Length: 430
Ligand code: LLP
Image 1 (cartoon, rainbow, N blue to C red):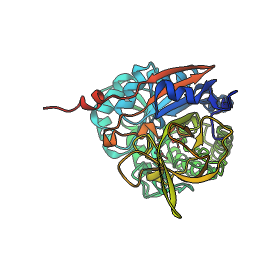
Image 2 (cartoon, protein in one colour):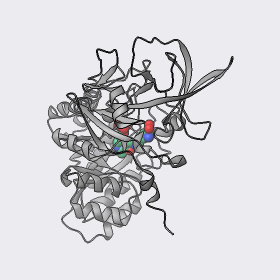
Image 3 (cartoon, helix red, strand yellow):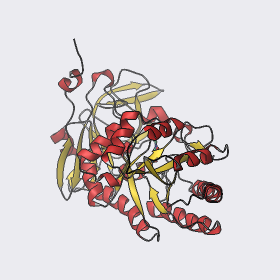
């Protein structure tokens, strides 16, 4: 199912999520509106966390903040005993400000600057993911002792079956130290000697929106080979392994991704087997899911406006959002399956293309989708919108970014208000 776990049809044949009628939410908070179902967020986190509880060497779920971040999200992570993976000083600040214990924060990203490294060490975060020699230089220059934990990010040379733009594990990537090239071993050797950190192991993240999980055992095998060599050559025994995130989600009925539990069983079986074969102690496991937590929990609501019929060519139906709140269709060719939020009696009768309101012809949310005849004022819901939409939103055409509502048990709470023109003018000077 594409909609969040709690989705239902209400008496008036309208869609509800978390016990809240979506059309009512649209009228109450305005559109575009992003609605997150708390129950789905929690269930997805638990899928990962419960699997980790069975893992003898322990581990942590560090939700990847880049998929969607806000204070309310951090609150849910804390409730669910999950930490957070941040990739910038900004994400780090929000996580800390919202009360995430520093020890549960991992800091990844490929070009952390001196201020970010200092902020992370100063806050006492759980670990830094070292992505480059430049970061090793910054850490080596830091006078700080006691140390933060650290993992060296490796690039295992695996290309998962996903869109090129979100594939990161291959050799030709800006992320991490190559294993094949020998750079990962050099980085481990160097990191062992850096006093500001306590090197615990390696990190990898091989890509995103992955359905075929076979790339994980392949990458884990390469990491184990490297760690066995590091033990033999450097006397370094890894205590932690991060496998990153990457599990895909369903955006349309054609998608059938594995579940977080299936993902975890592939990972744990493979780590157990290959670390055993190499005589390495089982590491604590870290996972960094982003999309597979936030994505299925989020629904975007839009109000229908104008319509343009080009006889024999195409019909466009325009909505009040678009590429400013969801750039994914244009950036990655992502497909979504919009649906009418009210009046389920109206059956699909036509194929239309849902266009946004941005002044650009590439601003299309969904091409050629089957929908009932839409009229101005109809509310449409776009499922699977929770990850990488709002997080990548812009003020293109000076449009305000949408409000966010969290729903559960029939209650809706506004967790981020819609931006105003004043918000957008605030940075203008002179
Ligand atoms: N860990 C690291 C180090 C990452 O770089 C990422 C995502 C994750 C974890 C979480 O991956 P996930 O579980 O969400 O697949 N904007 C793109 C996705 C970019 C992913 C970047 N890294 C999109 O909209 O498809």
